[in-house]
Length: 133
Image 1: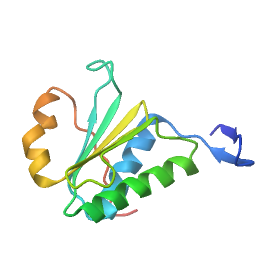
Image 2: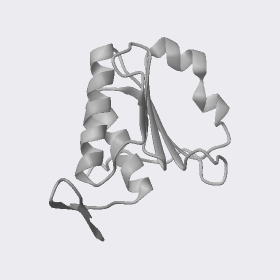
Image 3: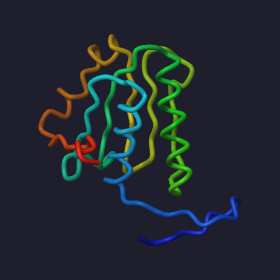
């Protein structure tokens, strides 16, 4: 696994691939009790990003916590978010890591925007940890 020197942090950081990052983001959402966590593979379908994680939070506090934990994980593996929108709100937080975009929705916003329908032809990827792990 390649290592990258993180300027400003003066520490070596292990770099990971986009699919590895997307899987871990989905797992972080699940670990923090988000509901209906979905990981979509948009390679060859979208020019915007390669992977999208979509999940439903049950409160604005939970949604912010998931965004914080994914951002912290990104920093640990050398991924800095390109964009963040909706933080502090109660309907939708978007974290843009270029190759991976994470959407943390409230239940009503997820139903309204229905990104799974928009990307209905995208394959769903397995992200859950195995029972033996």
